[in-house]
Amino acid sequence: MSDTRFPTPVRVIVRHHPENIIANAWDAVEFLRNWPARHSVAYRRALQHCLDALDGIRTPKRAWLSFTAALREEGLIA
Image (cartoon, rainbow, N blue to C red; front, side):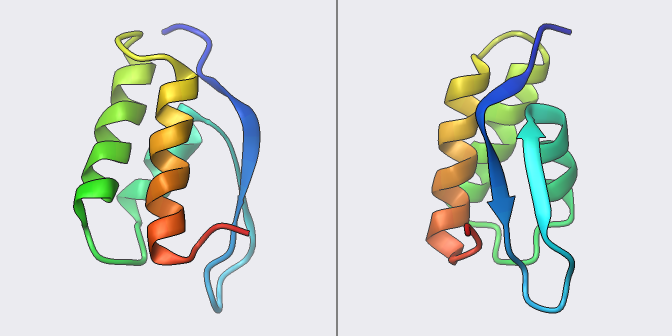
């Protein structure tokens, strides 16, 4: 597994849950597997891109961009 750290950690806010700091693709996959919103195209893209980053197929930056886009779509990014 290559280095999967995101360019910038992401602070995620979910109502009635503790704040989450997502710093790498593995943390993002764990968060996505417990996703508190609908499974939209952006969600599925983020999950696939994060899994691809873990496998070295995509860059952590690409995974980060997809992950933050999915968060923004659902209003979960701080």
